[in-house]
Amino acid sequence: MATVTPLSRNRTVETTQECGPREVGDAAHYSCRATPHTGLPHRHSATRMRTESRLLQMFVAVADALSFTRAADALHVAQPWLSAQIRKLERQLGFELFIRDSRRVALSEQGAALLAPARAVMQALDAFNAGALLLRRQQEWPLLRIGLPPYSHLFAERVVLLERFAQIHPRLRIETVVGWSPELVEKVADEKLDMAFVVGEVIDPALEYRVVAQSSCELLCRRDDPLAQLDVVSDRDLHDRTVLVFERALNPPLYDQLFNGPKRAGAVLRVDHEMMSDLWLEHILANRALGLNFIRRPPAQLQEQLCARPLIDQRPVLLRLARRRGTPHPATELCWRMALAFEGIADAG
Image: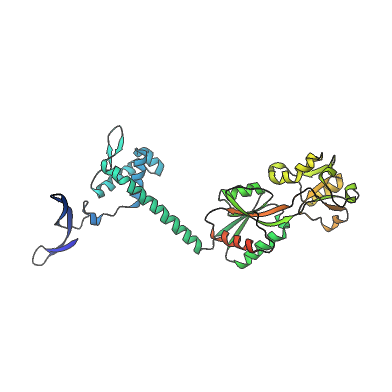
């Protein structure tokens, strides 16, 4: 409590009330005395104490490490400078926080008493900063990073969904990253991507999924192939036939879904690095091999030479939209809501 006390006829000076407990019987009372304010900070004045959060962070670091050297390394500062900052804090408080000798550093009684409140302050600051960052992101139009599998543009639903989203939110920046589905799922889980379209049963429990599209599987063969005479083809019809496949490491769940049945039926699996491309279709024609297809449509110049037949033992291949569970990225939430309302989108589960 500040008062103004006259020093002479023409001069006044501000004073500060310093209060302290005074024992009277069984009750604790407080007595105050006025002291002149000289213009310099009074180190014992509670009304003028302003502790910097950075100093509290240093105090907690030293208390955790019980070593100025280790704490300085953790904070990426010089040890002498850290020691000077702790001395500064101790001068502000009016007592020592640490007991120092040549062999060890330990918390003083006062330091031990203040450690928990100091931690609470740091946690509150972290929560404040996180909340402020979230509010700022909600006000901005941030970058939305979306993963796309190769040939996902052949799913018409995926193309239309992204085009509509970009039209409705023209200020939103969209960055696309192309990769195989397991790699994209990993990047979404690691927060390197915000969302991803994935093909096949590539499931991570840290993510949630919505089915955007599905496509039935069919067999591609030459028109003069005996299988072209069938209305539908089963796995057992592929016995002793060469089936072109992609490398399993690229997408193990999709590989197993497409090729495990034919393999059990006795098909010969041969890796073709040009899967789904025009060159892959030419390999089918040139080598009398077979292709399992779920999305690729032959170009006009090859349609007369190729024949497609439904595969009755194959489940449809699903295209899903994936995002992390929990508090969503604002732009991710906008895209997710559009996906839920998109015509033809089905819930995965």
